[in-house]
View (tube, rainbow, N blue to C red):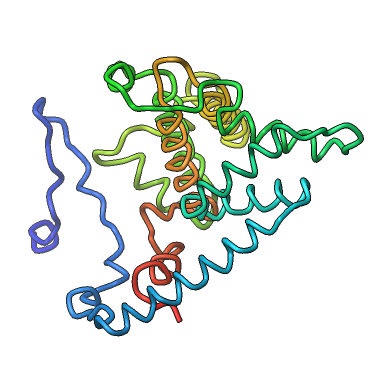
Length: 269
């Protein structure tokens, strides 16, 4: 009787059927850290800003002094991948204009394909005067395929990571019980009688397809959308990809603790 009294009763749903207890999550990695954390002082913040400004100007000099087409392309793609292109939009647009009007005969396949990618991505086959209008907002609110592809990318990426054995098996078990939605991996296994490995490979294909759909909107935007919209969605997708690259960092934040620390805690010196 004592054991029965000490046992936590399972919850019941509206129909009276027993319901699993709510899932438990690991304690916060940060504890009370941010409750007592003191941000950089005004002088230190000014010093960090001055150093960042100086570094940006040094990079700006490099961008302006670049005069070889292959180096222009490599520089642009590097700045974009690092997320630093927002500081050099005018300089990059000037380089793209030069690249667009240059003779590329005799260049190798890598150069030609990278040139094509950057020019198409930056709207050289469409109007460059991209402005967010009422039509754009109406298009966004209509839940277009771009956003459906993003939702698929996020949902399936999470399910793939959660289904991995050993490191995330406990997470996968927890997400199949309680109030969590059933995994698409599990649904595919049930519907097609597939193994977990085969189901994961199929869902991976769908993730790749959704990624291609999002990139397609960047390369060939429609008349209703501003180029900034698909770029923003793709940037969110890149963040999701980074969070699920080595595990479920959304649920278990150990994997991104260092990144968050570098972004928001450690000063730049």
